[in-house]
Length: 230
Image (cartoon, rainbow, N blue to C red; front, side, top):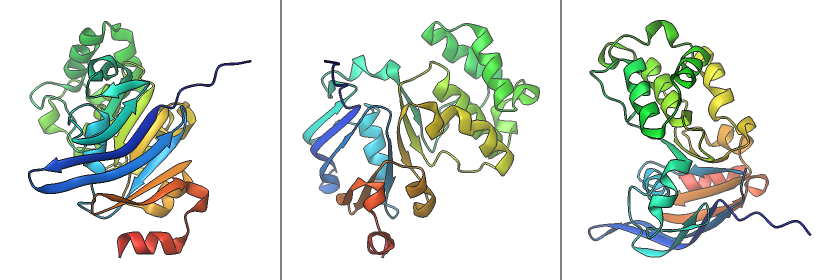
């Protein structure tokens, strides 16, 4: 009998506080390997906080969290090289060029420079890769951030509004790298809940840090979304 693959993400009554304010409270969901979880909710609902907990950048204060079979925060060191976080900030150095930023990241992971050039070509950034980031548009910086996220071939993608600032051509370029077709496990936030539903297997709808929706995307109705964002 074939072994059952362990879930990529398991949350059980997860909580995270900022001082006396609960940013997340009693959040539970299981994400199978290879599935896409859409994290929805109004501004301040806890979406970005959840991604930062999964990325091991924030410690959970309550409940349990397992990522790629490892307990957080105890085993966070064991999962960091296997995940890629695309946050609101690109996590790139503004005074370096795109190529310099990616070569620096490649050295950290022991990756050949050819991988950098491949990603620059695929995202349409090869011709602008020798310009400092501070001179580039937000959309170009976002494309370079996508290169950084997938450079080391992570098995889990944590994507916080990944298509922000991208025009249709750029979306078409990055989709093969971070889209559902990659086969990677993805946890994705977005500003368009209807589009997120079409692209997801599971939905976690947060309101005030609590899970108002948690389950298959196919079960979520328009009424559920209206209630979530009211």
